[in-house]
Image (cartoon, rainbow, N blue to C red; front, side):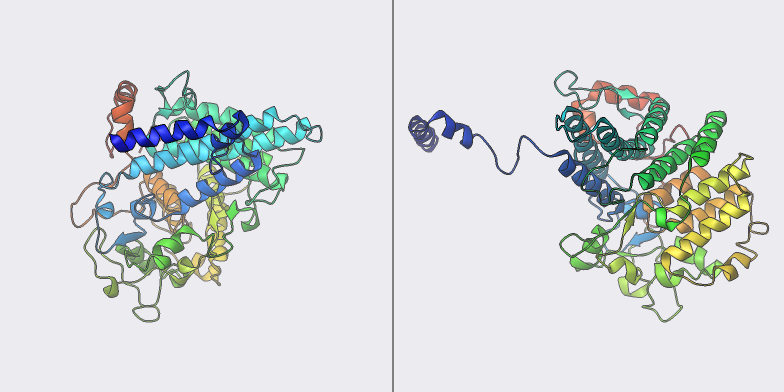
Length: 476
């Protein structure tokens, strides 16, 4: 107590010798400025979003495990679907709301309030639209991870400290309205000065936005097919990705700003991950040449053995992750041409008008994946009777779902989502626990403790706050 009194007295004495101006300076935290440029916030949000969707640290993102591309060695909780020990749902929720959506919301507010006479209304609209595209991406991702979430009352801490959870289907409806406005507003003006996705190319941003609209629409295909068809056909006619050159790709430039996968696989010096038998066995059965890029040859050239999913695996006994994943400059994608092609393949298989047949778009998706990974001779692979659209096993869902899942190898969330939507390929139950594969994240513990009434209402509305509760669009 004596030390506290002396400290407080000293501060009072010190402040009495200062002018008001100097006091004001001392009340300013140089590390947390009260005014931030919109460009800085937009850039920070972009990187936070890309990093979070790419990360493989079990403290932040376990989507590659949920998609059963990889499995673990020593610490196997996450591969056995224990996601609460490290509070992974909380980490993801916080990153997306705080470091992505809040920054984008603030950036839009700053742009709207900007009085710079050199900034035209078209410029403002275009920059807000860029932030909107990333916001819509993040909102959809949150819905597709948790289900119902705070949306309409989010980011109003003074007026609404405890926001309600909006219905996931309602959020989708609003996102579809917002994406149309963003697509229109990207038609003119100039974008943010810091743009690490498309370097200010608003035409490319339009294709990104329209491809995101395609994703929103096709996700609804089983739950609201008429709306889905309208949205998908509209997106296609407006113009979606047509090659890998259109990919929403973020390039990591140096070890000071590396791909976060490099941090987990290389900088950490750890050996926590190997390739899962789910993926290796599937690709071995197809003699898939992408194995040389996806996997390492640590067991011998062309020898690939996946670790039993969810087991306590010995690192040296199984196939390691490919070299490209160990490069700090490996780019990360938010949406790519392969993904778009498989969406169009599904749409064509349903008989919708998307400018080609299911087989053509299916082949485009596989070819785009091969080109992205630098794998030659896709024609031989496409001729494999177990790959060729006409002869591959199963109905269109199985054919498309299997190849879509393989193409998303470096994008765990989309790989997991393919499995949830298409129910293929067959996933393994984890060896250690036999727990069922999650279909969603549970809500964060903080929501249960601090927003209990709204959390309980949301949990009831979706059918229970469990990892196996299905999302509203997951109808099969």
